Length: 72
Image 1 (cartoon, one colour):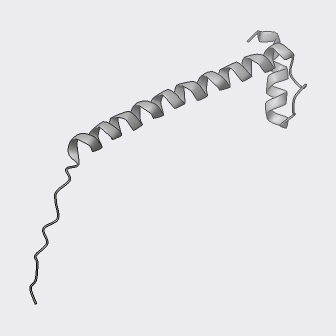
Image 2 (image 1 turned 180 degrees about the horizontal axis):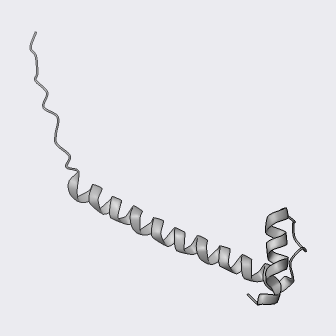
């Protein structure tokens, strides 16, 4: 982000100003950074879930239930 755009970004963040408060290139850069962060987070979550699924598939064993038949 260019140094000249910092004040506009700081003002937008500190005041909670909506769209149009920052220059378009800054808004696009922030949106791109957010999207990249979400993609990275989703990749990490996918790896964690894959590891959990593999651990469950390999470590959880299905044991048959033993029932005793009663005769009347």
